[in-house]
Image (cartoon, rainbow, N blue to C red; front, side):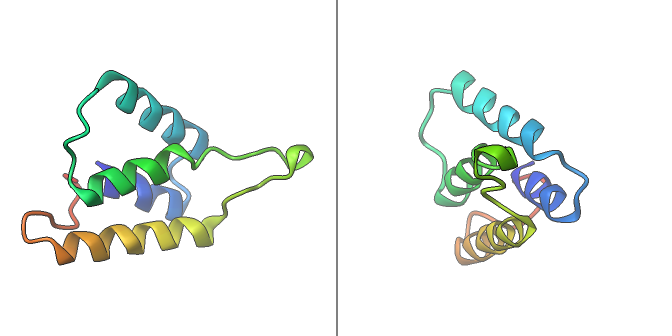
Length: 89
């Protein structure tokens, strides 16, 4: 799920505001902090994806940032034996 949302930010099929709202709601509903490093970092990135209006100094993050976040997620998943870059993550 997380990888799919990150990929959606990259290819423009996911709305950054909706992705951010989803991540915040997910984190609010699930008090567990026992996520692996890849999931935790992915959730953090998704949560901050919400665009900031230009009149308030935005956008803070661009497609290049989303590409970097997706690459970080994939590298992390590849480096962990129990995690893999799939649509399930």
